[in-house]
Image 1 (cartoon, helix red, strand yellow):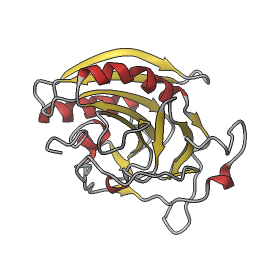
Image 2 (cartoon, helix red, strand yellow):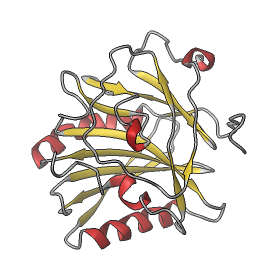
Image 3 (cartoon, helix red, strand yellow):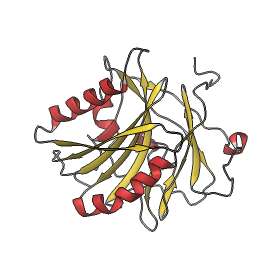
Length: 236
């Protein structure tokens, strides 16, 4: 595809040159119990100068609480400084393979479509804070400024925050008018060591608006587990 949705948008757009930035893109990892994985890609590969390396371990080791192992569209995303549950919205698929070429281990698209072909898709990722003084507002401002440097006609609209069941607040921005004609919604959630980012990106406004309900459902499925994650052989 010529434009490649998300190739310079969302999390990836500002983290493709992370040296000296407020945060580093986390490649992430996710283990799900699905068997019908897709193998198509629609975003160009983004090479980050600094990344947090992750590994994948069996989901069953972390099963517990109110999570049901038979829920084939749920998964555990984890890495240095974060681990959380996420679930695909109704009518959407959770895919932990099709986005790995870009370091995305949790991507979503409507049932019957694919990561490569769907007009609207979603993904989650984390930005590791470079130090304890970095705030979520700094990260959001940095993200917007970086995006605007590539798309001068970008329109950014602050939307109503999404409140999670545990009362955490997800700050939501809508983006339009980028250089590729895409529409995006990005939710930013502050945790102690990372900022979790939920992204909806669409090639047209109609599918974007149609997918906003699924975006909110995805965000509200989030359940934090712990930030005390140690991955042997990968440093602190």
